[in-house]
Length: 397
Image (tube, rainbow, N blue to C red; front, side, top):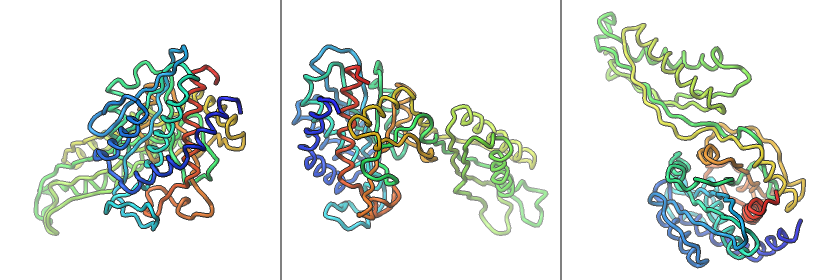
């Protein structure tokens, strides 16, 4: 640990209770995607106390900058997502959600508090670095909404690095995953509407059975995984909803299904979309029907840049020791729209252990109604974001 890292560690320790209290405030006042008005307001209030100028991105995102006092022209972007989930909290704790049916069940309360904490550290140490740190408190991650507001709004333009963090209940506090390459899958939603022709079930030849066509499409799409995709590549095609028909004795005129595809390769993502459209339209045509297909692109695959990830590992090793670093993890088929940041600017997404073996709630799955984050993870996140930002800007990693 170098002298600067020692200073940051001391500052983080001194600020620990502040960050804990702020995280608990966010936890008690959860706001879901596009509704983070109170969360954004509290973040702005904390930035105001530090004399950090800020602006809204969309209605509920917050952007701010901290410029170092030394010479330097590099820029790093730090990101924390801030939205909660539509989950009724079942965990009884002093900071339990006060909003019925809403809960921070994925740790975004911790991310928001940690980035405010990092802002405090960076603002207090501006005389120790040059260049610019951009802070992005991003709304709507859970619906693949907020990242593109920041990217398309130009808030990453000209940056040299981007860095994000996410707590993980799969790892103990003190462990941090910095894994090169694919970490999270792309997420696409689709709806296939099948258009047929109604008739009495006793005369099916006079109609076009949209329900039957839809069922054939459901089965055939799964074969795209086993027969059109390299077995060494990961892919998920899931159909979770199918609606068809109006009565037991009427050939269905309309049917519709909704599903998702998730992959780790941009090329496979594009090919799979094309194959789904071909399969659906071909099967419908074979039975005299037609289809219309809608797509929603929630997020791209999240692929950590190698150079950025190695830089993060170097900082982790210096600050927390070699044993803190986890160099690989099984990629998740869950998406995260921080992927859009990395597509724009080389970067790394790190997963910070938040599990305390003595507190069962900190080890449950994300999005679980008992989910909680151990306070120790907050200091790790604040320290890592602050240390990496300064050392990158100073050319020390």
